[in-house]
Image 1 (cartoon, rainbow, N blue to C red):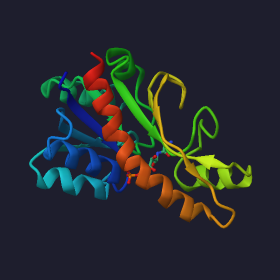
Image 2 (cartoon, rainbow, N blue to C red; image 1 turned 60 degrees about the horizontal axis):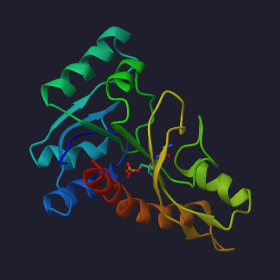
Image 3 (cartoon, rainbow, N blue to C red; image 1 turned 135 degrees about the vertical axis):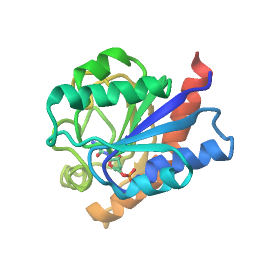
Image 4 (spheres, rainbow, N blue to C red; image 1 turned 180 degrees about the horizontal axis):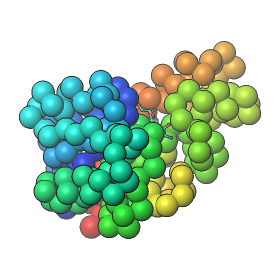
Length: 193
Ligand code: GAR
């Protein structure tokens, strides 16, 4: 199965870049056809340079109804059949999670079910892992449902946390693995059905 992917981002979009590069090099069959951000994220530049439609849909600056319909319209226009959240800090509206149920993936930079939930984003996650004295960390790719970091896990990769790791050094190590894990998870889905 080959998917038409919409990626949601909020930041630098390095995971999106990894997915785009795998797709361009035909290491995955699926292609990214749409990128949505909640703000003018720097990660929008690379997909835009490839001619992929990008859209900024900020939650605060419009009525909820419009916020939802803009997303649904774009997803429909591009015949999207897989959504990947790649560092998107907002919660998807229920209308989207309902419509694309079992077709939304998220990447989280720790080994869920530990170190997930609201507020567990970016460097905070790695701080918590180190404070808890964990021996291992690594990215989790999971299906998205209505609850933060809750859906079924598709793939995890492990890396050792060394005694001299800082949140920043751990973040770097995990991010490296994220860039392998996300395309791999998409390939797993392609092969699965
Ligand atoms: C990634 O490390 C991702 O795992 C994390 O945000 C970063 C986005 O980086 N996501 C979460 O913490 C979700 N709770 P990127 O914009 O360079 O891909």
